[in-house]
Image (cartoon, rainbow, N blue to C red; front, top):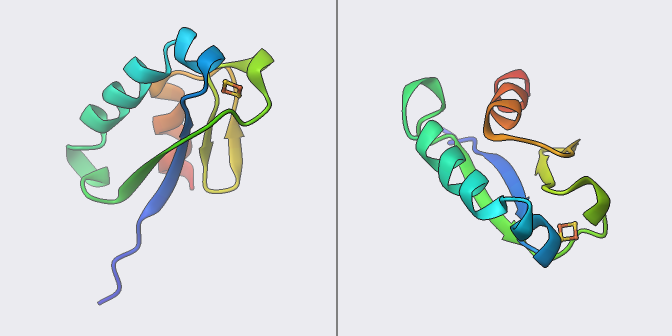
Length: 80
Ligand code: FES
């Protein structure tokens, strides 16, 4: 059986860090460690994505989550 994982890119550049990227990443890991999403996501930290104005930025698959929060990313994960 193929194990499919969703890729989540979290920007940890300086502006996103200031906007709470570290906490966002921690919260997301906590939230996806339970329920349906358990073991189905892979988090990848990236350098600046050049969209600092909309920090914190997260990419779920091919969708950009701008000025995002853990619940918004979670919603997108469930949709994708
Ligand atoms: S620091 Fe995240 S987009 Fe620039």
